[in-house]
Every structure is written in C-alpha cells, then in structure tokens.
Amino acid sequence: MTVAIEMGETSAGATAALDLEELLATRLLVQGNSGSGKSHLLRRLLEQSAPWVQQTIIDPEGDFVSLAERFGHLVIDAEEHTERGLQAAGERARIHRVST
Image (tube, rainbow, N blue to C red; front, side, top):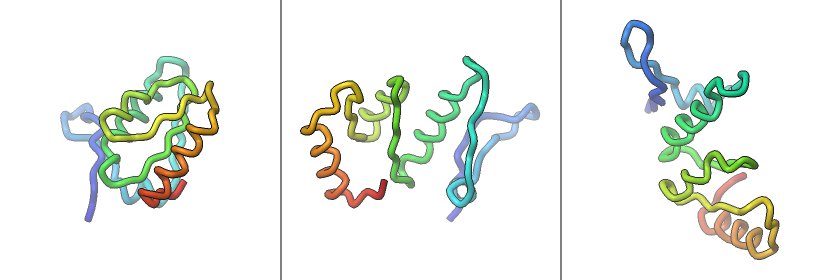
C-alpha cells in the first residue's frame, strides 16, 4: 500500500506528495533560515502521517502541542519534569505498545 503525504502543489498545479513508505525507509533533513517554513513542513508531515506512524515529538518551543488534542498525543511539559508526568508517559507507552 502506498501512502502519499500531500505537501501542496507544484508550479504546474499538480499535487506535490511524498511517499510515506520511502520517507520512513530513508532519512529527512529539514533545514532553513528562521521563518522559512520548517515548522510548517514538519506539522504537515505529522498531521498527514499520524494515522499510519507512531509519533514521538520533542517540542521544546511548544510549536506542536495542538497536535495532542487532534491526535491524542500525550504532552509532558518540559519545564515541569515531574515524576508523575514521566510515569504517565511510560504507562501510556506500555498500554499502546509504543516504540520510542
């Protein structure tokens, strides 16, 4: 099964897409100046791949916290580092058999 992650349109108006299976089999570097759209690209990838891919997001700036509501991600506030928060994360990982 091929899963296409729609990223936008080409200059010709065709759908620009990434093959999720190919993306997972390789590596991805997202690099650019401030304001160039790195977070937008990552958000799009995370939103489009959520139904098929287990996700662990380390988000020190809080750019992706809103994804938790939409996809049921567990959010641990990095500033708190509470033992309770870490235990909740571990328990949820065990329940859902998440590999991180």
